[in-house]
Length: 320
Image 1 (spheres, rainbow, N blue to C red):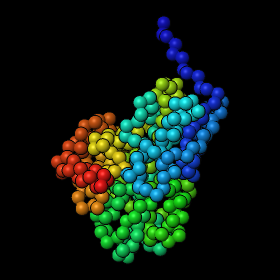
Image 2 (cartoon, rainbow, N blue to C red):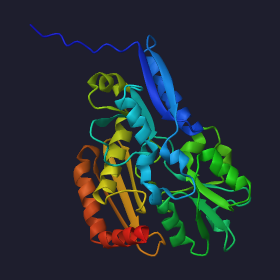
Image 3 (spheres, rainbow, N blue to C red):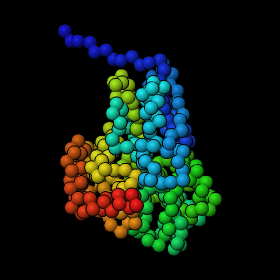
Image 4 (cartoon, rainbow, N blue to C red):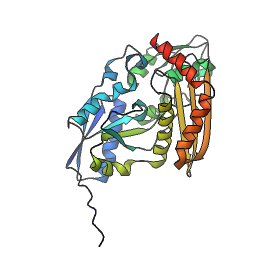
């Protein structure tokens, strides 16, 4: 006689931890709405929180602790039982999660490209020499510097609305943002042009949303499974594996981007010095379910181009 497998019962209430920025709240509300459609009998609430990363706005992330500054408080809320799950922009999630936490689902990816945003110019190519470009990313800084060495690149911190306000106040001639955030907040008209991956390879996980849970909650893992988008998960897992291989952090100008279609994966990666004078590129294609070998091939190809030496330069500059 076949044994009956009991499905874990969904709690009557679930609480989602989220940063309080407008984009983070949009993402949490998006997950809430999807869960409500799946489980209408469950009351789902959002716990808005201010993280350390939201509070420190006068220094680059690479100088104050990196991506983990955006997720720590949310993890504490879960460990203390004040929240059941947390919603993140995946590119803000450290490559190594603290013990006791896991990614339960990765939602279908939005546009992964970088976006050129300006009130007076149509593209990077149109900027006059000496124009100030704002970006929070060493990856973007390196790729812009490599192509346009006569532009001035300055740090840009704050949530998306704060960054747009700084542009509108004339502090920058242009800023570079993730296209996904602008689209999610209904601001596609602010995008003057997209920067294609061939010119600006996206960061690992860019455009994807992740749901984090306490790893001791297999019940949540099962209930969140319908939200997991297989192709996106395959792509971002490969990207994050590349980043992890090189100690991926905000101190390293590193890009990794995979596309998955019909069971095939195309994986590209880049490592550079912040000034863009040294760049290593690599790519590989193959079966999406054999991403481990694809990652190994890309890592090997980058290493053959002195990627470790490039990273050593990055780390010495970060310390300095």
